[in-house]
Image 1 (cartoon, rainbow, N blue to C red):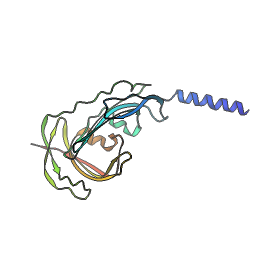
Image 2 (image 1 turned 90 degrees about the vertical axis):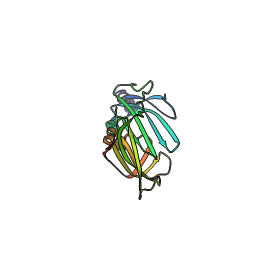
Image 3 (image 1 turned 60 degrees about the horizontal axis):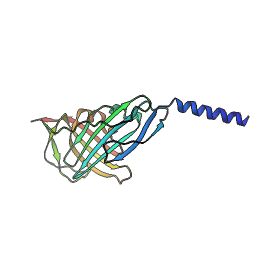
Image 4 (image 1 turned 30 degrees about the horizontal axis):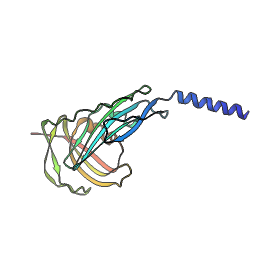
Length: 202
């Protein structure tokens, strides 16, 4: 009887895994793409994802290429043009999602980073990186499809790093404001607010 129950349990596991979505999994810093292993997703996952996240803080630029099972909470960010761009910190995220086995294999297509001024601007903030103070010091000229002003106050850190307080003002795309913080990969935020308002037309 014990052998019979074991065989049934193994068969059930194989059938369950066979019904799960299979996605490629990888993550690589400062790369245009990545490749890795193909593995089954949890039962509640319906999509695979692949994307690029480019961040700039002062003179330092990092780019993360990622593939995997899509966290259902991040599904609203699929196919969106997520851009937050400020004097202190900028973030560009491309995320493509699909719903069939191994559909996220292959190269990652990044959205072009547009640089053409569009006639909008947002107030700039002094570089004190404090969550309690932010003094206006001029304007940020918006580019591309940035037509919103984003204001972030809270704590943020890359996964594994110590969180720091930030207060940032940025030009942003409407997609970025609609999707918000859930668009970010491997960046942890806490005790934050993110508000957006229409950018000012010059």
